[in-house]
Image 1 (cartoon, rainbow, N blue to C red):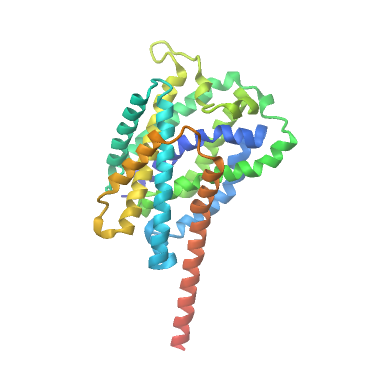
Image 2: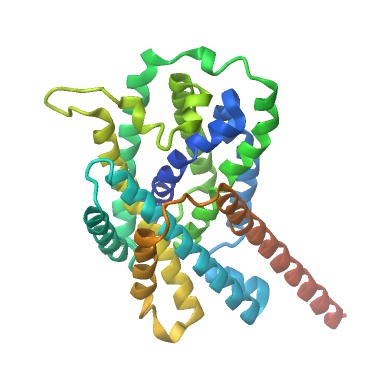
Length: 349
């Protein structure tokens, strides 16, 4: 597969639901400057793209074992597998919660989760062709819907919500930039795609930051930092009351329906990543039994307490496993190669 497989688009599509879930926290952290958080995180994000590129054709399990040895790599694979299942559960609950705004009740929740589980297992199979084609199509639909939503909200923007910033906005900007960078905790599972299917990381990182900036500016300009920071899904409410006769009667419901496509891609990406890690841990099983782990993550999404997951857990977990560990793996692998090269030259002498 070459460049047209859509790996980069699939990963960006998978990150869109996570980006939207961060709108409220970012507004609380950086106030009127929240829309600058993606740009502040971009230099570190480009550095992370370079780190991920250093792995070459290796996927995540191969990278861990190549850098930390067999047993150290196995331990790393187990940690990433557990983190992936945790993110899968968090993402599945967020997906079901968005759907419950249209139909309430626990029976509806389990129906939504069961349908998402089936899609995630089907799209997350070892053969990635269906996942990549689906991700490419869903990215186009979701990106068009988000752009349309931003355009429709332009008349309602109040630029006083974006400027001038307060002193607390400046001090909160670094924290907000770290929150954006923690998206790497989800994106790292894109390394479970074959190298030729991952697309250009540099261009997609820039495109993703630009799009995230646009979403933040539209949300802040419409609601202001105080109100947006208290909302659970501020972007969905941008189209509240909007209607297009013959097309849709409730703008927020239509937008939520389209965003479900991105939720499915995210769940499939995490399922596919967990499958690659599971096969790396126990190669002889070839993924048999993985569906039980995936089903357990979806079950936990339905029964766990309603309290939201702490922002600190997702922040520091994403930074550690999405950025620090891969960077350390690159340094370890390069140091090992340098040491071997030096030993070889000494033998030759």
